[in-house]
Image 1 (cartoon, one colour):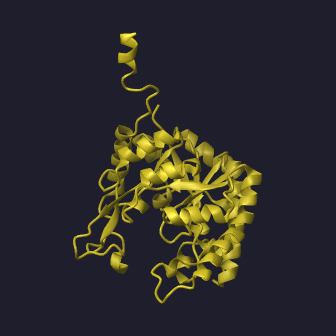
Image 2 (cartoon, rainbow, N blue to C red):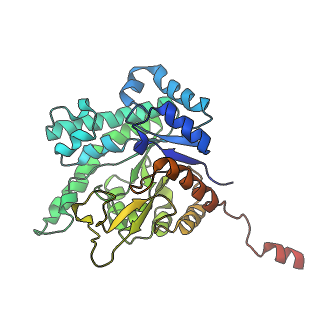
Image 3 (cartoon, rainbow, N blue to C red):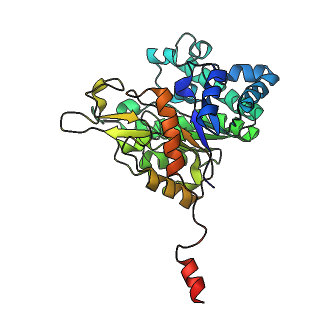
Length: 334
């Protein structure tokens, strides 16, 4: 049986949830991965009002949709980040507050704890998101890095996220870090280091999104195989490289969609991700969770792109075989 296909609602948070759910029901999605922004899933309301989470689930059910995960990327980003004015635009006002760095980090950590509690009220056991990183600005190693500072950053990550994971454990909820540039883990090496830093806690795993590996020239299928026991959730998103000798892999401080970028996110099936190989790897590791389309394409109308992406996933995903291809021939020869 093919896996459920959901839509992550983060890029649709300008629409009321009821309106988006109606669209997704017509398009044929199985459910939604609710973003914790817009009116899709408000963590503060969920912890204050026991009826709120049930109401959001009932809204989805009226449209024939399920929910198996929520996304808390924006608040999670602030837990370990070096806070600056950019965070004001992505954080709830009560979390950003006066913008003082340590205060923002502490309030973000408390909101992430509440996110686990809110997820449990909604009846889901998976929260996806970001961790932030206090050392992303050191990526190029010039001026030369103090590598002791890198070591301390992983220790600090564990100190900040350990108490959050205590609450996730208590609520029976798991966290899936979307391994991603700007996070504490963005490739194979840093993912190993992140899991080691937090003591390989069972509650802390991975939301695997192949689009963030493609422009790093990394093999997402091999990543799935290496971290098989930590793949808790999967995003379906695509990326297209345009490295023609004039465009840079570093994206040139250009916004998504600009012509001179060396790579860009595109609708699934229109980029460079080898989804067949990726889905084969997911079959090999026994992943049976949702395939959640995170739709991002600055060059395509989203109301055309979302159903096109759904159709692509439906025809590309396939259940694993329970037998070897030549088993029938062997049987006939007995």
